[in-house]
Length: 113
Image 1 (cartoon, rainbow, N blue to C red):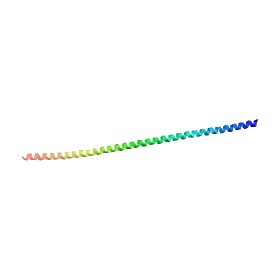
Image 2 (tube, rainbow, N blue to C red):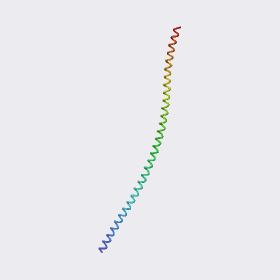
Image 3 (cartoon, helix red, strand yellow):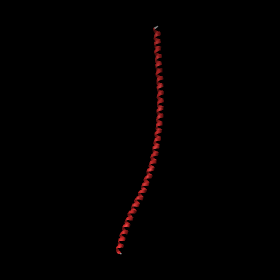
Image 4 (cartoon, helix red, strand yellow):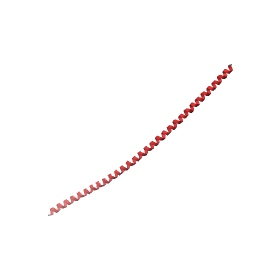
């Protein structure tokens, strides 16, 4: 009787050990599947966020190009205005000199009369 009890006991522990191993392996596979799914979801989110950042960068670059062009046009307009204003001022200074010379000539002419 003792021999069969020992055999039953050994069979129990062997079967119990195999059951524990199967349970642990099943848990490992389940955990592995969960981790793989989580990894795929994280990669998908990273790709989506990367795409969004690329789109935002492109939009910002377009805005910067547009504003740079607008500023260059304004600078050109200001340069044209500056040239006109300086040219006008130079002409005015020349005319003032000419007026002064004419006044002096007029004074000489009046004094000769």
